[in-house]
Image (cartoon, rainbow, N blue to C red):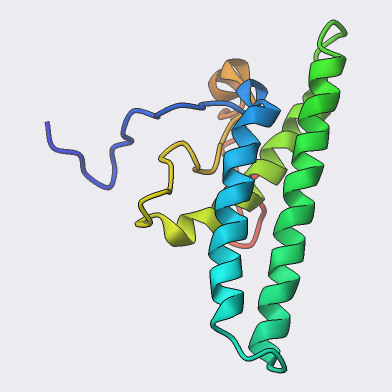
Length: 142
């Protein structure tokens, strides 16, 4: 059967944010740092473009470190009750990074699992879709 825009292909790798580990974030951080550094090297050091790219380099590094810290915290506290807010935050920060990485999806080092995650876990997928209210185009996908 041919895959159309309306059909969702089977997910590869990570399906939910509760499955992410710090090991998943490391390669993504390295990939983004390399791609952004390439952009930085092609800009003039005193230009507005250079400033914007340098800022994006710093933001991506900070976001990656923050996500890694969240995942390490979750791993260290895994014996405790499930923290839904933590899973939501993990998904938010992962999606910020993957949204940027998709810009280079044709790059040979890009990995198919670097895509935005819609759900925190299987339960969220099954029961989180009952809201039928129309969402604003500007609403953030939490």
